[in-house]
Length: 317
Image (cartoon, rainbow, N blue to C red):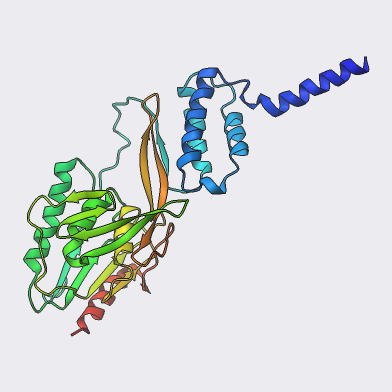
């Protein structure tokens, strides 16, 4: 009898240890394992997580799941547990309902004195042609305002919630200048460099983007530049702010940025769903790493940001 009771206790104990996945179907469990393996291998926070506990916690959350689509809420739960605040899960669900989609904001240019150039770098999304149009539109604005006796430039990143950082950096390249602009830093401290030269943005592996028309060079290179940010400036918008960090003759004004100065990579799962996973943090040209909010040199209220930038540039020369 004692041996029988002891055997029962062993079974119960083992079930408690391993039962977290017993109420998940093999198909659902396999999908969860696929996701967790992906996260464990690539997440920016992979070295900060106890993955055994993480996996068991997700199994508990997915208890009762029989199909892949029934695991979707648990996949979102797993993404949230990474605590990078930038990764997200896009389930492979076909929906024609666009009623919840909000129209993209329209960002208006500011009026500044004629002896100061002004460029707004807004969010950037779309296909390759749309991104080339984005670049050419901004470069055209730079060329139209450029003149020998310009005191400096204002680069307005307020309201830029992100998108593709590459066209943004190519577009602002004539003002930003050539050379190393920043870095992607990975959990193992390896990095890739952001380099800009003559309309090209590239890293150690080759060219990311080539300007589709002839590149532009300022009439007065290495100008004074004021950067404007707010708490909507995020992701790729933060990448542009960081690219100006460490540049001489540069000062930033405004509100600290949103706080996701990290890079995402898109992974397609076996069912066609996608995970946009944060895999690296941005670093400036001096290899100072960010990953959270980018603080301006002069923190000020929204209504003061442009005025302070104009006043600073006006004192130069």
